[in-house]
Image (cartoon, rainbow, N blue to C red; front, side):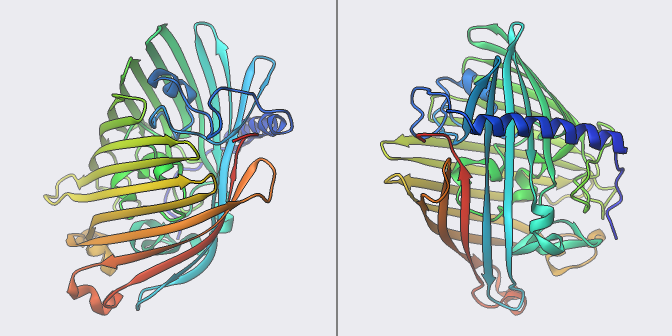
Length: 437
């Protein structure tokens, strides 16, 4: 059974596909020319200030990482436009232990073509983000112990993660320079990312090598693919205040289409950048009817995070601390997720990383009807990984890596999951980069 969801008319999909096609053509044209020589690009594109980091729009939606964060991408200038292309894909083989453990070969992937140019007293950015996960993740999910959220074949996904949509984002952004250190921004997206949470996990530098979703995804940043998003933001020196309106229902099971609906949900976010290596945000949202299986449930969500990035002579070190809380209106019990993750790139080609999570799970984990959902348990996940890059394809880093995840849970879940559940994933990853990066 497909999730009930309005589908756009064919002309709307055709217009979205046409815009995406144009951006892809322009960006791939950029890949065929000599990338722009820019100072400090040995680790990727980097912003020189918080205002510049906002204008770059190299993250999802309007979220911002520390200004010192390198962004690997191909870049070129054509007729007043700056054209950029970045993205990555990994082929993953996951094996999990215990009665509920699964195994699967699948691919997670995304690509983001983007075009920018000066327009009037500001800058126009056109951006789209695409994923082939609807084709590369079969049966509408891949195994991930203790993960919950969204549906597959009309049932709640339990111990699995759903694929992303073909259209993850289609957005236009205009940044109006009010003064040297002041920026007024407008963001409009049939599919996009409202102002809530930090940069979503697929695009967060501290999570760049981990091929799996965070267990707290639906408590923290699941709105990074939402319909009919409008956002306004004011940036002044080291601070940014934003407000968004969007359609609250999460994407349906048909990941190939573009949904739409009334703007019925709202969010606000305050971002502070005290220094080039630091970023912090606090955000809150009221989300109307996000889950198709509980259409009468509305949610309040709050998130807070601190991000740190430190460029190194032959690498980079990025870390994130994140808290997310979601509460269904009318129910007393909020659900919390806590995350600490860090990725270190060293000696140019080597990566080590860790992700530690502590998340609340509901009775949905036992596959009980959604109407009876209550707090069930708090579970922990400890992930550690290593990868190394090899030169295989020009303008791309090809990495070979592996990750192990150890889980802790209350003893009453041992019959369901085993005494010490473990997950292992091995992967091959390709990431686009510019010349000399």
